[in-house]
Image (tube, rainbow, N blue to C red):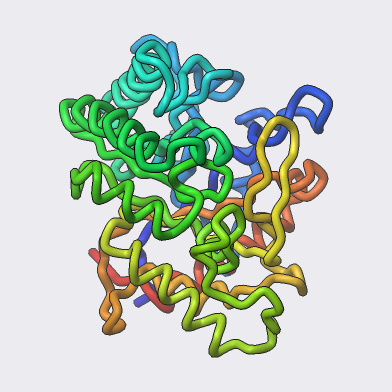
Length: 348
């Protein structure tokens, strides 16, 4: 019989990240829920959706009645809920993880609110799996003014947030993107996680696209693995570089995003430049999605870790015309199924 784990999720945050203001309009959560629920490939559908806990999708200040209504609403689409993105940035009510005492207090408070919603959704039975995504909420340039001191301060903030998460039965996942100070290179990401030193409570969220940018040394030339004049047809060298990153961060990985990347950076709206997600079918995509997903879902010996109970597709900053086309999500679902067929397992 076909594998039924890990569960296959779509992401809601691409409807918000890089949208609004002078860029394209925010895509309503209901639109994303409908597109996710309607995707189908050979009778297989998405199992769930991962959420951005911020307006206008799901308010971080939702009370218990509002959370219950949202859970019932999502269940009406036949979907479960997985990981959350907590709005820990200054413009969203949080603050820099290496900022003032007040900044850091607001950061931790946003984590607390997200964890409370997460726990309630678990108790309601709609959220069987998933962590709370965080980042340092600060750019690389500001971090670089005092790398050692700022990384220590970020680690302290993450540790305080970890106490909150553990009290709620939650775990935190730090997504390595080249735009976040102290998390912008694979070596700095490992250093930060080791400083926090809360295995099982604070881990890494591996996004295939963002993680590939680590090999190119964007914002961290000293940690570049691939040469500047890299020939993308040299598959063996790419594989070795990507495996170096995966081997370093896999022991910390607790959440996983399937994605494709064309090897460039891109920013939209108020989001800083980071790895460009591209469509499954993009001829410029540099990753073999199915094979490279195995670098994260299997250990160095090729054995399934079975650590991720669900995996999620991430297509941040896709144009709205792409995101609102049902064909996009059928293609994404097809790619996700191939990943599960190759690196999943069966539970009855």
